[in-house]
Length: 129
Image 1 (cartoon, helix red, strand yellow):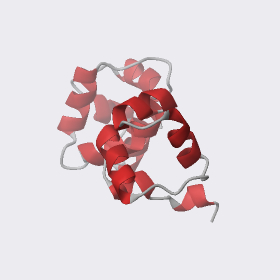
Image 2 (cartoon, rainbow, N blue to C red):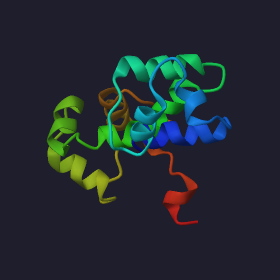
Image 3 (cartoon, helix red, strand yellow):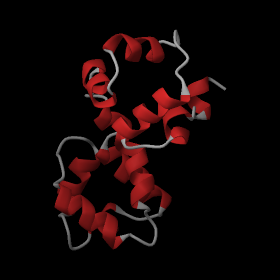
């Protein structure tokens, strides 16, 4: 999910208006463009918005919402180098043609800065249920 869409989702969950969400940080029209994906937001302003809503928005959960869009630029070669594997091994794992060992899985979690649950957890909507 893109940052703007994640902000939109969190704002709706908090029952806030755009003005309330960005109050004192960004103008409401600029914030609306961020939510709609027409403008980007600086890291500083993003963290200011999240910190202002810290009681209601968990940084870790927000990161989980957006990580797929921003990790998708990682190529098989990049991941293979980070994990000390071959590109072919990454390809086989991604295409369910190789069942990795626990040791290999741990290399992948370290390379991706994640844990085993996050690496292999399949969300209900991705399963097609």
